[in-house]
Length: 251
Image (cartoon, rainbow, N blue to C red; front, side, top):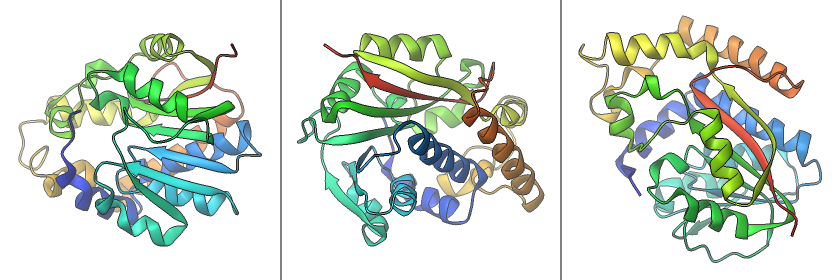
């Protein structure tokens, strides 16, 4: 697994500061759970990072038991006070079997050489008719030193993610690229201006973690429109991320 836990402080600051990307991803995931799993009563967020998405799920699903799992759960401790139970565990060797209505893998698979092992572990934690919600970075053409600094091993094409899920014994309920409005800006930021000061350096110096007010407002508005369209069944041809909802294949 490739991930630098020292980024948690900067990630938390970005999330709690209302960064449009983190807020939009968490909101989209919560709404997809509401749409495809309205009776969800137990949720497990694997590779929870700071626990931001788990905390939002807890607030949206009143009365739902939400657990967040990571090897560095001490970095997620702020979520424990927001209705989230924290579990320290290796994602490929989880202490759960068939116990959750929904499992989240949000920007996790790209950090693992053996993505199949992580998917198998996530699948084993699901109940028979449970939902797996996955997000991954997309568009390999956006690959940059930012991905390397984040510990990414790959960026996905939709077909690649679909094959990965299907090979893992999962049936895709929905899948779509998202954050398409960010793709041109990310290309410029990471490929054209990558050598400029502050583009990618220490976690606190990454320009993308600190968008200006106008940029953040525009991005939030675009993300809201995009989310509404995805929930209505629109599937976008491209985006800087991909979201998928899947179920275990019945045996």
